[in-house]
Length: 373
Image 1 (cartoon, one colour):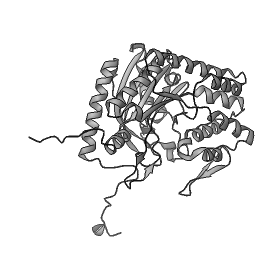
Image 2 (tube, one colour):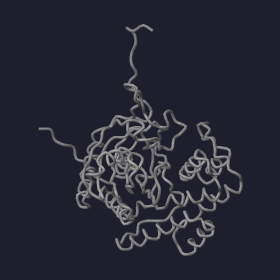
Image 3 (cartoon, one colour):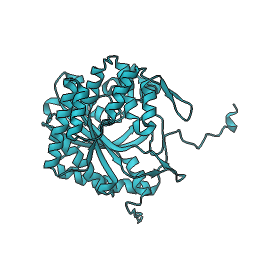
Image 4 (cartoon, one colour):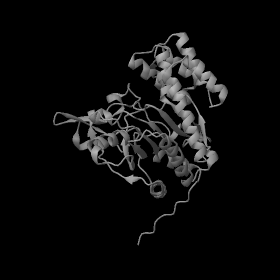
């Protein structure tokens, strides 16, 4: 190659974008609103580094088929470093490091950029800003209920109406117990099942069935290997996914599916308690949805997800499947990885760039340009 004639490309890697002033000013407004809500709820502000030791943050992402399991990593001085893929794993490291000095519970919030080496899509980037709020060191499920109220208050403060989003709740113990009952013991196969359920909104019930079976080829021709379950196991899982609320009739259905599996019954009892806390908090913008499993593998109990109730369009004006704009759940064992100390915790996360994508498209906020003096 003739170096004198070489011209670098002005294009960006897939999943990375330049951000214009309108978007940046909208981000400033959202962050200002978030900080007000956090002060109201008594959370402390924290910042952790962008890089962590790879072993410290762990490999909990759902994209096991991606390079480095979805994490951007490199070797430095014979140790592997990774750009953080979320703000929760670094928080667990921080909590373990400062375990004896933190209050119980430790209520922290953080705003920061995260990176994921995953397949990009509309409103789905490989570099984006997240907001997190977490309770460290409490097994009181009132914290989980309050986080659902908190994320709702933030979304309304950012311009959405109550009717434009819904908080979906479930419990990882339901799927864990179901896997126990179906005797699916292989951890890799369990992960494939959870990832398949997590993709229901994107690929539909038929797509999930393929992923639970031999596998699925998407529109681009990419093939995703399936869990290779038998027909009985697939039928049981699909039956479970059809339960959509916490009515008495559906409690009976879940108990029948449980067949005395204590893990499933524990999950139902926890959801019942959270539902009672919602009543105390006068919060009703939620539904039970067993298809909510959250992609990250460190969740251990109640999980929740904020989903839009209206369609989102791409740059061509075509309506797209947008997925969730936030979510979270309980991760009782994440801090314990470092110090073998029990530290039950729970938290929520909002993807600010995805939220900005929506509110600018819907003209939910007015952005005024700053006048330079």
